[in-house]
Length: 260
Image (cartoon, rainbow, N blue to C red):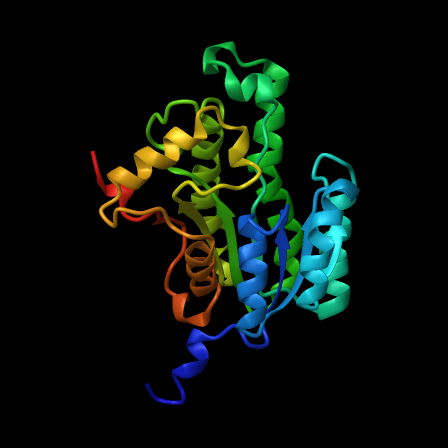
């Protein structure tokens, strides 16, 4: 590889915002840790003070500012973006790793979901990506990357995934429209679709252990993916090497998406 090509595969000097760190198993933390190792500067968020006691030691250890950010609370998303802009002067990447639905709606049938619960799941898990993108885009003068996290249940029925299936389908559609709208600003938008891993959010899905076992058996690689592998894909998509890609849902699931 020539020296001129090396910066394409680096995050050195890039600055960004990562939303949704919950603990040391969360996808947002995996991204935060790897992005720092690859030279990026990061501001991260967690939900609230309850989450902070688990997250603060992690972010402190890698030199990352941590803010509370509940996207349902007015002004908190704006404050997180403003802090990143004040600290860095610009934003090169955004990672949106937030998903939530009321347990009653998540564990029930989609046809039984409440109007309020469905709307809140859509607002937190999907529309908040559009909201934060609107806030970040003016501070990406050289363009950049915006990623959100989805799942296979968006495009096919996964037992017990329930209301999150339609919500993630909407998120993937949102990604395509955002890619079209933000493309002229050289902003690339993707959905990353990991295989199931044991995160706090996933623990709310009924019979999740069975889902892990099914995915392990079904995957061509005959194993589950790791937090590190999800972070590695996310890091690549935020590198200049991925500059020709936008509007995609990209799987990191051991190949499960390719199977019947």
